[in-house]
Amino acid sequence: MEIKQWKDVLHIVSGKNQKAVENPNGKYPIYGSGGLMGYADDYLCEAGTTIVGRKGTINRPIFVPEPFWNIDTAFGVVPDKELDPKYLYYFCVHFNFMPLDKSTGRPSLAKSDLLKIEMPVPPLPEQERIVARIEELFSQLDAGVETLKKTKAQLAVYRQAVVEDAIATAKHRGATVLPFGTFVLQYQNGISKRSGEGIQTPVLRLADIENQRISNDDGLRLIGLSKIERDRFVLKRGDLLIVRVNGSEKNVGRAIVVDKDDSYAACDHFIRCLVDFSHIIPEYAQLLLDSFSARKHIKENMVSSAGQNTVSQTTMSSIMVYVPDISLQEKIMVSVNERFSMCDSIEQTVDTALQQAEAMRQSILKDAFEGRL
Image 1: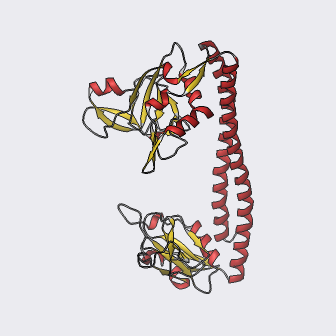
Image 2 (image 1 turned 30 degrees about the vertical axis):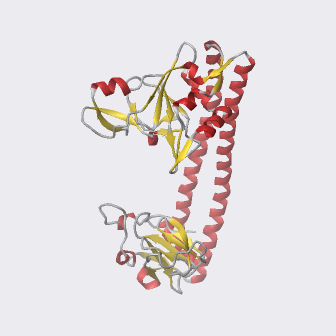
Image 3 (image 1 turned 30 degrees about the horizontal axis):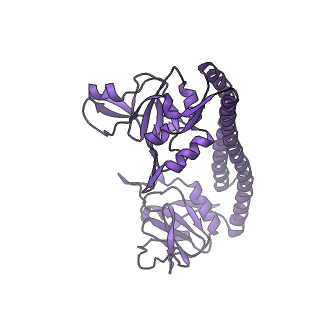
C-alpha cells in the first residue's frame, strides 16, 4: 500500500462559533470534540466527515454520516476522492493522536501537525474491502460484548435478589421491624475542609468509592488536619459511610463499611454513621440500606437541586428495617457473602473479557492498516 501524508488525500475544516446558526429545531447537528452539542440551521462539513478534537477530547474520533456544524474545539477531517470515508475514520480510531499534543494544559492539536500524518492508501476497492472486513469482525465483537453486558446486568439483578432473600429470611425468623435510627449511636457529616496545615491525613472522596468499597487506598487526597479535627473525623473500623450527596440517584444513601482503624477521614459528601454493635453488625446494616424498601424511601425523600441529590440524616433514620438477633445476622451474612463472592468471580471474568474485546478491536485495526487483514 502506498504511504501518503494527510495533506495529499484530505482537507481539514476548522470549526466555528455556533451561536449565529444554533436552533433547537435545526436540521443539522452541532459537534464539539466531546460529541453532539445541539442543532443548527447550517453546516460546515459534508456527510461522511470524521471529527478529530482540536481541544479537549483529542483521541476519540467521531464519524458523522450527515452534514454538520463543528465548533472551534473540533476539526472536520474530510476525505478527498481517493479516500473512502469509513476507511479514513477507522484509521483515525487506530491512530494515536496523543503524541501530537504539544500543550501544557488542556490537550490540543494543530492542523499543521495533522496534515503531516502518514497513512497507507490502497486503491479504493481495496479500502472498501478492508472497511467491510473491519465491520464484519467488529459486528462479531459487538455481539459478544452485548452478551457480556447482559451477563453483568443479570448479576446485578441476582445481587438484589440475594439482598431481598436475606431480609425475607430475617422477617420470617421473627426479626423486629424498627426505624434504622434505633440502631445508630451517632451521625456526623464528613469534613468540609479541602486544604490546610496540620497532620497530613487521607480524606475519602466519592471518586475513591467503587461498588460500595474503598477502591483507591493508595491515591487518596491528603489534607492537613489539626489534632482536634483528627480526633473528630478520622474513621474507625465498622463505621458506615453513607453517600449524602451525588449526581446519581442510585448512589445516594448507599453505605460503605470502613474496614480499617484510624486510616482516613471522609469529605462532607458522606455521612459517618456509628452503629450499635450490640444490636446490629455493620455489614448487615449495609445490606438493609440496599433493600428495595430502603431505596424507595430514600428516593422519595431525597432533595434534588442543580443536578445533585441529597439525603438527610433524618431520612436515613426513618427507614424501617428488619433486624434479627446478632447470631442470625451473622449466619445471614455468611450466606450472602458466599453468594456475592460467586458474583464477584463471574463479574471479574466478564470484565476481563470486555477488556480483551477492546484489545481485540485495536488488534483488528492494526492488522488492517499493516496490510494483514
